[in-house]
Length: 205
Image (cartoon, rainbow, N blue to C red; front, side, top):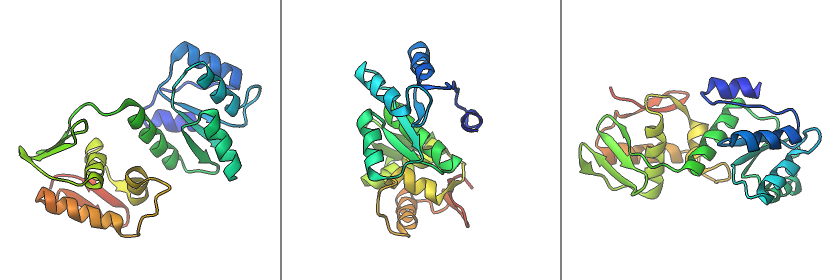
């Protein structure tokens, strides 16, 4: 199921049936990211993560587990996991975590552009029609989120998770407020469209 979901989202996927095969596969193919289940035959997910980190492997690891206690999460993070997803979870949440982890690990070197808006993630400079636009840090993060996938309708939960983080205590209307800030500073109330009942999309009229 996970393989189909990840391949459907455009990722190249290789699976392993147990921890030993997972370690061998990482050595042979050097993936950009690993999704590890804690409860695997042979070497479990914690053991795989621990062994990878001991040999200096920095591959980002998303750990999957049915154990939701704080101590279990700490064990996973101490073993070397970069993020932790508790079962049951939605495929949309898994894909959002994978995309966010890959962005963090790879960084963003290229200028992002859509219509006449462009941002440089390295310098955090923003331009609209060639003119500089001054944004706060969170306004920049929100605009960068939209520019990575223009024209796509993004659900509110996904935007809040990616820009503000799962652990952030954000108000119920914070997204609407920041979208309003961006519309005003970009000088175009129609560039970021409200999709009623779903979320927002960066889209020209």
